[in-house]
Image (cartoon, rainbow, N blue to C red; front, side):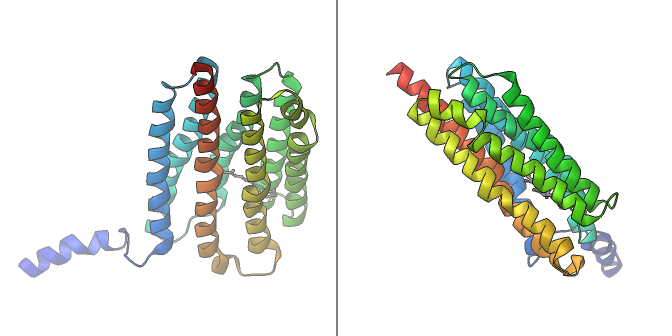
Length: 249
Ligand SMILES: *C/C=C(C)/C=C/C=C(C)/C=C/C1=C(C)CCCC1(C)C
């Protein structure tokens, strides 16, 4: 009786709990929690900064909130099935990446007048990048054309923030603290974001077996999101608080 009860209780959940040696699953857990904590932090800190910086911090919190919600789901799918298709991540990216792009516009708009064209060019670059990648990954077009379209969208974003109008506005009109935040943020968009196309390349184009690289890719993407979502938000927080404090002093 006791024995059958214990098998009853352990049989079903066994397949669906986090194993102590499941490092991919653990990385999903850790980042889910970190994203929730970051969300609470960014939202609470909106109270502390000057009016025009509140929007930037709210957007940082929305990025981590959307990602956290998504991570909880991906984590469950991982634990149930031992896989989580990269295509799931596109749902998250479709919302979080445009919001991250908006941050460039917002931190400039907090200090000077910024033409709406800057905003729209960043949005268009983002959509081209994500739609190209998705069509390639989901099999609606070849993996190479999808990759190249995605790379073109990313290149367009990089052009805008380095050499285009956004980059010029930052260099010409932003106070030093905003300029250095802008530079850090665009370095993240260059180096931190490069992890995703490298993942696409390794997963689809370098001839490796997708199933083999999937585990590694999940861990790499999870770590990348810590930098690209949480650290990015912290940079925005740093400039928002430093600008507020320098006003108060
Ligand atoms: C929080 C999530 C972020 C910052 C996701 C960023 C995703 C990318 C930068 C994806 C880029 C891609 C290319 C540049 C080429 C085509 C394939 C993609 C979509 C993986």
